[in-house]
Figure 1 (cartoon, rainbow, N blue to C red):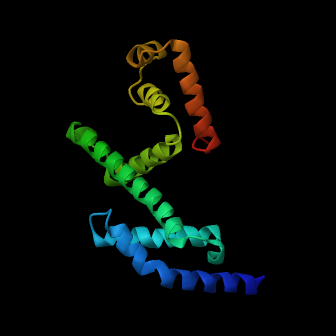
Figure 2: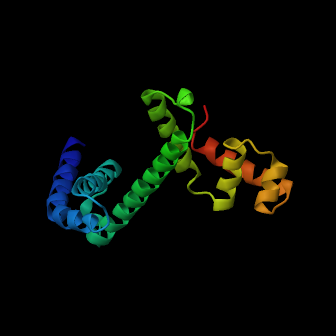
Length: 171
């Protein structure tokens, strides 16, 4: 078994050296700076390594790498938008309510986790959930805002909560 792992590791090493330069150039077309490009390229190969994919089974390596990279770039942009929105929100709060840097980091991490968990849900379901949880609105108010019935809001909430529990976000 060790021999197989070593052989897979060796194959992945060759795969990395064969495609790294191309991937880095490809990624940098979509990102603002070289450091983000290098991080994304490295993260792409880390995902392949973690999934223990045999590179010899990949028929179209550049298409495969591009798909993984696009997802990572999308996630990076989504995280930055969320972080920017959170920091904008904090800037509007009185200084006395400003969280410590540690609390700020923990809150941002929690927001990113919630965002990732809710990502697969339809936009209207995410919006209903966030209106309920962040804005404290009741189902009737949410229904009026979304132009749906309270019962539909209840279904949306059930769908969002099911997604959260399935992803083990809530202990």
